[in-house]
Image 1 (cartoon, rainbow, N blue to C red):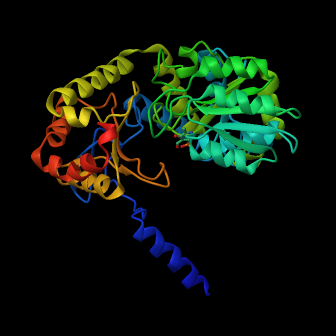
Image 2 (tube, rainbow, N blue to C red; image 1 turned 90 degrees about the horizontal axis):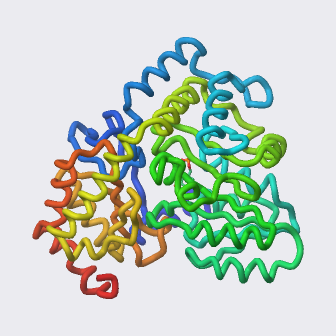
Length: 404
Ligand SMILES: Cc1ncc(COP(=O)(O)O)c(C=O)c1O
């Protein structure tokens, strides 16, 4: 079979399974209302939870740093790419997160890839929640250690696996806030288990940093600081509105990552103006509560209004107290049709389908942000409560009554 035939078959299979994905090109800034092909859409699928991606304070920080330091770092951190904004960002993150040290990575995916690779070897084992983000799973697959996956949010299952692991070192990796479900990991139970088994506990706060509690995320809220055997990975491209990521923890662990983390060592450092932008964002996240207050108010408004106007759909919201509000649909066709109807009405919400989520659990994943006004949310709920949406969703109510 030629390459062309080989790829064509995979493409046809993926398209037939309704898994083919296409990209949208936004002509506007990333904010509550975006423009695609000249058409405006209320945006309910961005991870810019605090609306910082288009904040004038971040833009000014980027412009000033670009003016002073240019737009390229020119080298990896261990050659000569580590510049003042990177250093300042690491100090600010360590201070805010109450960690001995923080290390800035180009992105969360790369930070996650380095962690098991740097700490675990052939005789070791990494345990992961079954619903962990792909970057964690890939990190588990890419390292030399054995990867085991425990049932979602089931610390007893993790404990059972650790008890069977009689030799080697172990690491537990979990999303803090699960990216496609919006629920939160049982972090204090996982910490207890990690302590009992001398494991490292790695918490991915991609969707918790800046948002949950006082902004330090789900781990801080659960009383699990990045100290001792706990490493915390946070991203800067979501609530921080910028780009990049960091790992926070005790100095001995962070220094180990600097020495042994391959995706830290063998890549160019973030451009300095991007680090300066993130620094401005961390300052806002640490000092100001107004954006988080607005986000939480919008979240309450969404849930209340949906319960009042579309109770059948409100009952389909997955249990989540975070800005990730997935509405379980079930089959892919219905999820696509619902997303299409919203799109026709000027609302952007993507259908999340396999392989991102398990088969039969396709969903509309609404993300609520501080950039929304109540009027955006009201418009969204009006469409969800419409007769047109009722008929689109009808097949899923027949096939999925257990979720109602
Ligand atoms: C839970 C989680 N971890 C890690 C990442 C990767 O972060 P980044 O986008 O900075 O690579 C993402 C999303 O992109 C995520 O949702």
